[in-house]
Length: 123
Image (cartoon, rainbow, N blue to C red; front, side, top):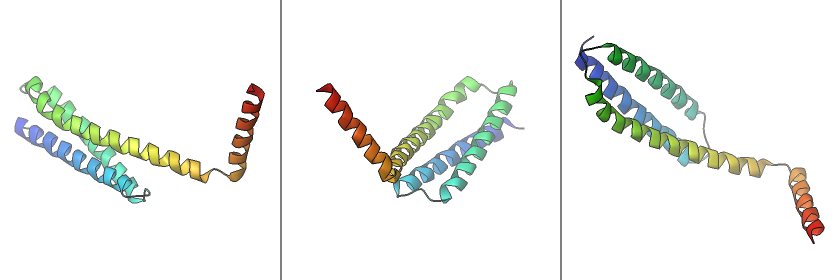
């Protein structure tokens, strides 16, 4: 496979990964997580597997100067990682809020009682 083809494939895959990560982030920012997020996650997994495959081919090609290319690809990977981290952070935040709201009243009453008993015993 030609050097330039691998180079172009790597850039295209990284661009697709960034676009997909932006879509995933928008999905969680726009409200409750819908079933569409699952197809986006599957696409992300596919793109990451593709990225690994391209990277392995590039590493096996002695004619490529990988060190020169790493900086270019690194910028895109940092952007993807940043978007992905924002997605995970927001998803965790929303998930914790949902968990708190869905706790049964019995559990909340139990928590209140245990807090009261601790403050009474400390006095």
